[in-house]
Length: 315
Image (cartoon, rainbow, N blue to C red; front, side, top):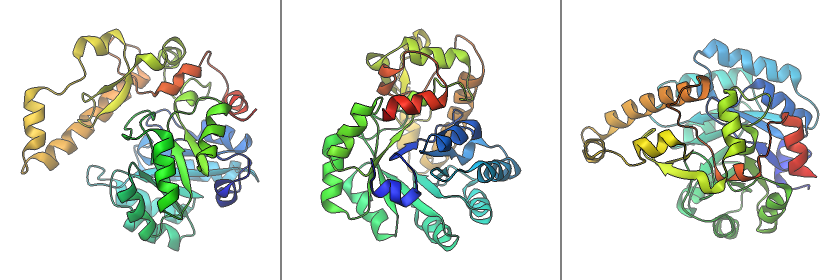
């Protein structure tokens, strides 16, 4: 399974344990590195810069020869912590940064100066070509099978479109729950895969047992799109509570999002409210739960150690 991604990150298998808000933590990433893959954590999982710095130091101390670690940065204005998070990452050092939801130009320039590789989330050819022109080291193509904020194109269509038109490695994100899925993505031309949802139901994941068990109990047919979390469509498990509150914005929310003068502020407010709601769902067991996940939970049959999940993906 040697590919451009395994060469870029010096890993045994072409897999990135995807950064998941509230779910990912250092324990998961340490086990990922031990298993020969790369692990990534959203910088927003840490409330303070000191906590972020401590996590980097912990991962550096635990790093193994065939493992890499990185962080995910939300690089648009909704993340007011972005610039300081980038500064800390560059000061402390990590193997790679994954950028999402905005222009990666500043991140690429600063990270490269610090010897850090930058991979950029993309959902279409236009943005993939843009990040390539800015110097990105790889494009993470988010397809319509991804968990959370997903793209619109099917994995095969998106991978082939990008590999035909850009020269940097393409990493496929979405629709991977077993080794056969990885083999399929590689056969389409991907240099590797980013896998998230199967790791939610891991011993190390920093969420409630109820959230983990939901990934066992529900399957691909139970994943729906909702606009209720942040205003941007997001995939969640269709629990009784989700069915009760619905998945569409109210007329007021929709009107505010379309108002040019208010749109920016509404997005920032919805982003904050959504993060707080997701935090409660992930860390507290209540009937009001909105659990983010993708259709690849179809392959999740039990709660396992991260090491066992890696084995299922690679053997």
